[in-house]
Image (cartoon, rainbow, N blue to C red; front, side, top):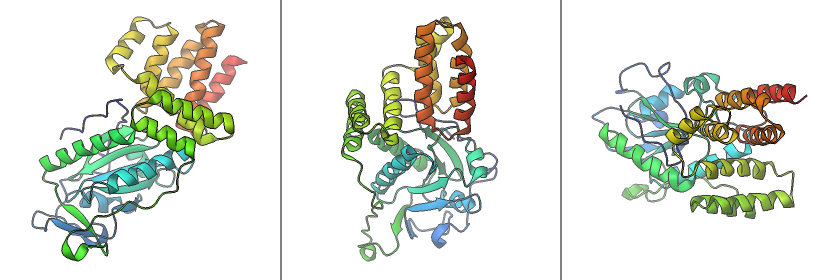
Length: 326
């Protein structure tokens, strides 16, 4: 089965569910909410919600459900405010598809088997299930407009695999006449400058988002959400207009060039290959002059914000950086 193409910024992570989905496409199995999958099931699928909590224990239910409707999988962590913010965006976008998608949210910290199965090297990691099979989507945060594009392509893939049912939410207004329009759950409003940054990202105006986050940090240097947002959108801005082949070719041609190596490190972080990025830059670090070392140090600190300061990979990289500095 082919995968949904990546969003324009190529922010995607590897997903391998072979350890969980090593069987034929589900048929006749019970799905969440009592739905039954299978070729003879009606096209109207009634569920209690479009949004579910997935765990190591109940995930097979969602594999079964994916025979009827595409299941978007959001692996995140409460340790990252950025991850929580992006989950709210996913809720809004999935809710806007009128029951053609279901979202399963997984706490990566509490469900290590699923985290390992999805090879979630960065959080959030977003994947999908179609007809019981995993589909690669992306790792990290992407603008809302690109999310819609990715999900439209996911629906096209689902249709090719005969997964075309639409969910009706049980008890939703209008259900009796078959005209239910499920709504995403309410989300807390973003601080004004954060909302300004998100709107700018939606427009593809990365510089505008950077200005908004910098203003937020100037007003409150302890705003960790703004610090993480600034690091993420700065990475998007640096990658914009560059292809993966271009960046990797430049790095291969100039193994000691700081700019070229930072470019491919950005690419690795955007794709969830965080340890590769850290190792590349920390291996290069001792051979650099003072200006180069400062540039690399600053970029690594940005990566710490993107990945999350509590991530164990950050702890290892921080210790290695400290040993090189002192």
